[in-house]
Length: 174
Length: 97
Image (tube, rainbow over all chains, first blue to last red; front, side, top):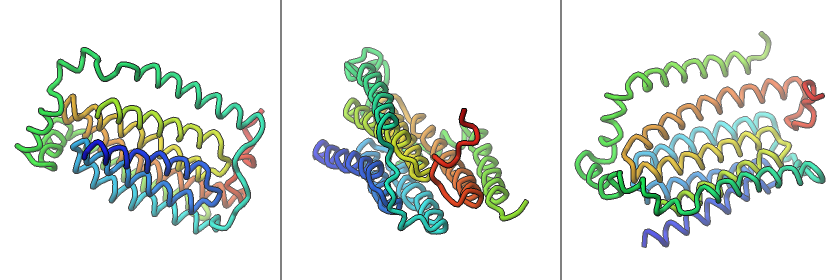
């Protein structure tokens, strides 16, 4: 059952990804992106990352995509149907570079499943035990507020800096 | 499910790369960068199922930084649009040789 769901979500994510790249209308692209993010959230659930799946839907598919949509509509790009996909040499170079990256990744992934290093780690059973003991949120909250608390507080400062920076950059006249 | 998730992550990353290189609309290029970030997040989550919870914590931080990056990046795009009346990257050739 989990395997079938995984392939359904994977197909939706890949289809949505191609939709993002090929759709001429920016709003259409954005809606495909929301579909892709939601499918990836479904895969997170299958991979036992329940909290991240919720965050993915709320923060990514919700807040960040609404921000993109807001900017597209503010700049009135929604009915700009001019084809902005490159052609000729640019298209060839784009396919060459992504093909090279795909080849590298395929070479790295060959035989990744039976890598002997994986035997040293707890595996899916360890994660299931952790989730049963602490719950989906407790498992991620305990290290976040103990071992990684400095990074967590710095993230708060980063968000404040980004907030002030975004307002300063987008302001009408400096 | 580890290898399947890693293959999906690689495919999404390549689609994102293709989008960044193929499109000329700055907002769509930015959207494709988000797709690449998501592909990397997916491989972090896939590994964290085997290697411990730390991978998920890293994804949490990546999402926060992505949110900050989206806010600043979109502000820059708005500011560029005010100047050039366009978000097509072909028009921004000031630094091109």
